[in-house]
Length: 313
Image (cartoon, rainbow, N blue to C red; front, side, top):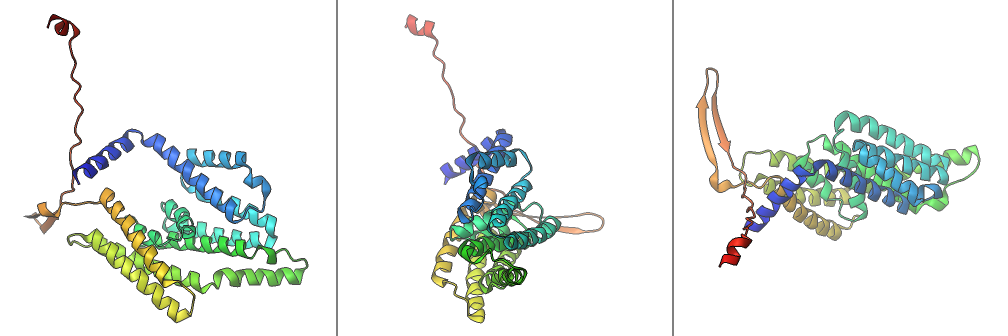
């Protein structure tokens, strides 16, 4: 444990020292992975799959604020769908417009939630996001996670039904427009997952803010259980085909990852808890103070050998 704490302190000092450069690197990598994911799922406009375009877009995202990555991902998605069918691009524009209006209104700092939710979705462990945002975010993060799920299902829908788009004629286009809306917004699995993720996120948020020992660990366990139960109940109520064994396995993996997050972001020493009471003219205060687990990193000592004294010996 001591070695892990020393590693934590070393990583923390390293990040503080090179924060500017690390910020550029993680924004570049996140933008690159997001664009490559979009190209792999869609990829209908050949010019957007050009490696030079991808690299320039990723570099631009690296030097601009993180929210620009979301905007760039939306541009790539709409561009690919425009090559597929105008109706698809129009539906995507409406969804992205609603996302930007609600996202920037309620949770403008949850860029990672919007981008990482689709990425983890296609990695088959989207259950990481409600647990993570419950620990690190706030109830408004439900908006960001929900839109991340909508984008993931939208990409999956357009990728799976690409051959059915592109009809000619006004009536055919109208019918296609309606079928796209029903295929995305009317997806029962998506609705069940959004509701279950919202429940788990709020449960984790409420418990991790409670003044009890090991609140973060309890929150992770409670959030994981509530997520599994909500998905099971939702699947039975709506008769959707959700693989419960996969949900359980993915949730267990997500909970394990959250314990790593808890170690680096929280990690309190409850054995040294102190309770303090004091008062002023208007109030009497009861304060519970729990120190963080810290350890000083060993400093390297360099021993200099005097050459002259060595020769005299």
